[in-house]
Amino acid sequence: MPFTLRGGDVCQPTPPTPIPNPYWVAFSASAAKLINLKLGALGLPKDPDWLELLAGNQLNAGGLTFSSPISTAYSGHQFGSWAGQLGDGRAILLGDMNELELQLKGAGKTHYSRMGDGRAVLRSSIREFLCSEAMHALGIPTSRALSVVGSKQRVIRETVETAAVCSRIAPSFIRVGHFEHFASLQNTVRLKELADLLINKFYPECLNTKDPYLSLFKEISARNAKLVAQWQSVGFCHGVLNSDNISALGLTIDYGPFGFLDHFEIDHICNHSDHGGRYAYHRQPQIMHWNMACLASAMLPLLELERSPEESQALLRSALEEFPVIYAKEWQKIFRSKLGLQLAQDGDIELIEHLLQAMNDSKVDFTTFFRNLSNVRKDSKLTDIAQRDEFIDRDSIDQWFIDYIQRLQTEALSDEARKRIMNQVNPKYILRNHLAQTAIEEAQQDDFSEIERLQLILSKPFDEQVAFEAYAKPPPIDMQRIEVSCSS
Ligand code: AMP
Ligand code: MG
Image 1 (cartoon, rainbow, N blue to C red):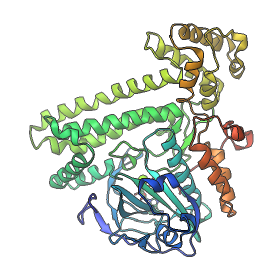
Image 2: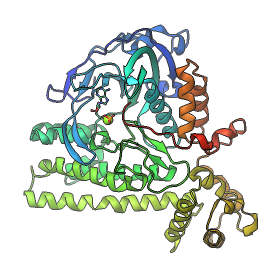
Image 3: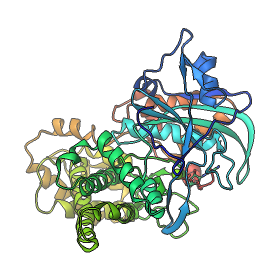
Image 4: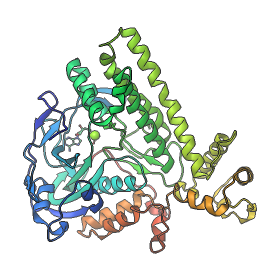
């Protein structure tokens, strides 16, 4: 294994715990390609060796042996408070393939399971699987999902459910919590090794700077700032932005009670265990910034290797201040493009904010509104614009459309060209909660066809898919409020 955390203070050998009678639930051929997985003569869904391997029942398949699976320790802040040591309570790193790490989530207890059972339920495994692959297709950095394998083994949560193992892939699953782990142990030697590992493998450009550790901090922070801007642009709420769920590579990781906005509600809370709304949609940028402050504190001893504590703190503080600037720039860039604006002009931000306020006030569906916006033309009359009907305050939205059309007239692009570009930015299909829920309920009855269908649709989120128009629609009234909790 060329790249992994090593040492008993951060990882432990962890063989997966076998699970009875595993069966295929889902599989991503495109994720399999990433790791050059050999499908075998039967094709993967029929390959019993891979089924057993991805269930955690054996350690070899397709001529490969994963001889030293591990789980890792990390620490972190949960819901704003220091939680001490956490760790991979149910994730086991099998090893790596093609420079990517292959992890099983839900494959039994680990050294770090604490009170947990080390298992994941079918419901949350399907959600993680579908969402990872959907985010990838949206162009948003994320861990990938290779498979979900189910078992009829019972797992107790709020109700009794059945178990599943989701396998996931990333260049690395190192997170802010790993830095916090060594920092809390006051082990600067190990902290430095962790930072060096990341720099050498993923951030080599930092080596050419005056202060590689400060540069590393800035790079991780910038990636995560841009990541949140991308989330906001598709209405994605992560749900549990604890520092142990924040990737050191700026990937979306640890899908739990996430949700995509249906109607736009700026303070939407997708996780029903999040009573205070700490992780509400509009708070995500601020919370990610807060997590970067946790990272900065953890990395402080590295800067102090070269300079005084005061100087180190001042450097990190000013690096941290770059976060909102990078975020705002990225957010503006993306939202301009969602409106089809190529130039940056004064007044654009007010235009975007006016729209979002109106959408919030009238609870307008986020995805379909932006998708259909590309139908507005430079010579559209207000009466041509069907979308006005979705708003309660007609005067306000009419004024917005007047301003928008005027703004479009200052752009060189033709209506047709703008429409093409906007449709590459504003997805038609997202993983709405009710779609995932339907696929889950059918899978619980051993019908996996809806998962496959969703996978197919969501792998081309920007394409018109005539046969699947219904999947682009907002949820029917009885499926609008599906609640998702942390217990997964
Ligand atoms: P999460 O909010 O899913 O990121 O989980 C927070 C922490 O709890 C992580 O350290 C997880 O590994 C751990 N955890 C969550 N569920 C379980 C479980 N069923 N068994 C063991 N550990 C768990
Ligand atoms: Mg986690």
